[in-house]
Image 1 (cartoon, rainbow, N blue to C red):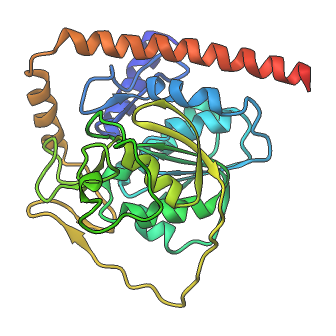
Image 2: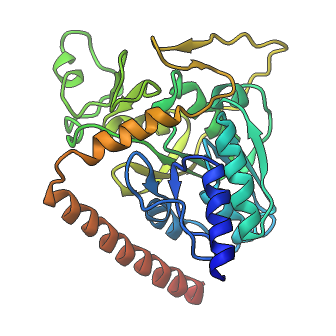
Amino acid sequence: MNCNRTGEFAKELQALGWWYQHFEFPNGVKTGGGDPPGYDARTRWSFIEPFVPDDLTGKTVLDVGGNAGFFSIQMKLRGAQRCVLVDPFEIAIKQAGFAAKQFGVALELIMEDAHAYCLTTEERFDYVLFLGLFYHLKYPGIVLDRLAEMTRERIFIHSHVIGHKRGPGISKPDYKRKTDDHLLEHPGFPRLAFVEAQYNEDSTNWWIPNRTGMEAMARSAGLRIIDRPHRQILVAAPEIYFGKQVFPKLVFPRYGKPGGAVLPGPQRYDAEGWIEISEAIAQRPVKKTNFLVQTGWKWTNRLRSLCLKIRGRLLSKII
């Protein structure tokens, strides 16, 4: 790409506003460098990719909270027949449309809140992407239950989690009041932390699961955990199908936090607010251990990816 064309492309990106997903276009231009509050989408994809078939020909995909469309595009590049991206932000829908065009794929873009979409559609999809959205939902359990019912083959779940504790080591089919309260109070017992105020300077964060809570909620939705390639990521498949009940009318509450957005409904980024958050985070001291841990994750995942591919080739030869 010549310099003039690169400059024009950069202006087009700038006109589309601030990009939350950072990735590289086929022409080499990037939407960002992975700095918070944005993130490097390819790093997150590297944990998911080993569990996505190379050939998705004829498959359908749902991407809730798909933002600028990076993950939807990856699925389409593998041959997915149809990919529906749902996001409440107008700018994200525009960015996703622009990005899809650059990669030469077509996405179905729906500007809608995840609650509203999941409670008003009866469609089912082969693959579901539920990435970076769980903790932004006021009612994450009902959305997860709906997505589990909508998944035919596999669902990918990513959420911020708190705590490193595993379960208390004792699992019971029936916990007795008072007698077993100490088990429920264990730091590793499945739980969600409700955030009434802001979390990480963001008023859209509502519920933060702990390490075991994420898996427990997935299982309770009828899903079987296939793998956990990262503490924040689950790969799951349907195990129990509970079905669905369709009602003729849905009345859903609007909600929000003081000074924050009111949902559900179309949303817009507070550009100045994001810039302030970015600058505030940039001024924080960076711990060297964080870099080492992140680097370790990347290398560990690359090794995992290679092992899974080799295992797949061996199994195909055996079968």
